[in-house]
Length: 322
Ligand code: ACO
Image (cartoon, rainbow, N blue to C red; front, side, top):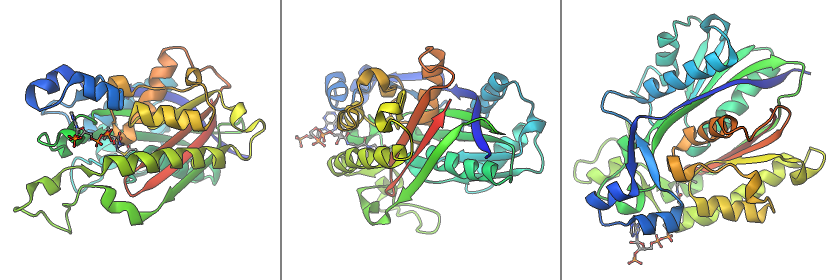
């Protein structure tokens, strides 16, 4: 059997840091409210000359250096993003060109906060069926560009960043199972209404930014994390007890803690970076993964459960032997 193994990980955060205290100066909010309701303390914000592709490119370079591979080794590039640089070409093609890679498939995946696990699921299938041998899977976002800075209920929640995992086809276990799901009936709970085809409503400029029914999203997110985690571990020995590290999408510390409680997963085995990064959508899981590796938490052979939930609604998971 062919597995997709993680052979290199890298991430990149823009230099500019915006703390809760900084936000207090520009909107009617407080550090205390943000920390208590979300666990977020700060977030990184892309500079004017940075884009999703420039963030993703830096993360990809770091992951390639970590894996000790060259651009010519890559034969698949998937970028998960909700904030592509432009309508087209895809962000994946822009990064491919910057890396001087030619010919391999390169495309974007749009599944909002679940984008990275969707992208891993797709790459895993490519590698398992012989369609590729070495894949760059990137989650990259400049969510600050779709935030309404006059809406305190959403502006405080998000940040920018990018992470990248390199997958290589191997006989040794890597990804053990992966799942992707969606249910479009909840679109109005979390969305950006404006679009290319739907157009931009000049009378309602706020529709160009993230709108969310926070309470409804919260409840759905907790219930879904529980469902997806149980579905994913159903095939492994020890079930949830066999998981060394739970690495959920980083939306809100209260969602992460509630999901961990439902799964009876002690917080010592949960990776949480939402305090430092806020919600970076499809970049949040690879950013958390890279952080945990740099902190020396994750060891070779550990079993990792990555799980995400986001707009759409979409949800998905990856179970991987590191
Ligand atoms: N600062 C101060 N007060 C605020 C702020 C703010 N930034 N934002 C909202 N408030 C106020 C509200 O106006 C409201 O005031 P009122 O009682 O006078 O009307 C009060 O705080 C409570 O508002 P709620 O929306 O009920 O607050 P809640 O406890 O639900 O927390 C939150 C809001 C943090 C958004 C929560 O619902 C949540 O975390 N939802 C999950 C959403 C999420 O993380 N989405 C990310 C995208 S989806 C994903 O990635 C999974």
